[in-house]
Length: 132
Image 1 (cartoon, one colour):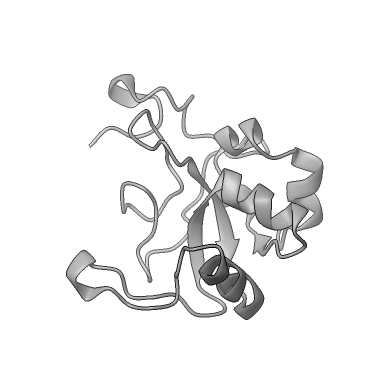
Image 2 (cartoon, rainbow, N blue to C red):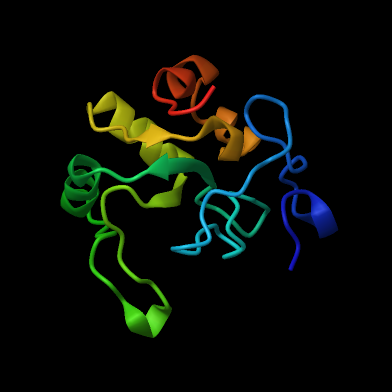
């Protein structure tokens, strides 16, 4: 399955927002648009699932109120439901929206794809990072 810019995906390579190699976000639960554990992206990923966040109860509640229930399991779709502390590749526009509304979860810079910078500033991402 193509990832990032491979095979015409157009994602710009496997680099994180710091310019280094993109690191894994989570294998348990398995995350990423391509369900490979990384916040890879490509042309198929119209939501830009590029920000590796660390879920919080506040954000899960906020997301549910915005119409995206991330905490309820959906076994038929292979989705386990998320809980506080889980890492997950979140859509960059949703993270930005949560930031503006005061509910942005923390994130992992080294596992956040550089394409997130199309929606979010590095300064904002860095202020909410759990890593350097």
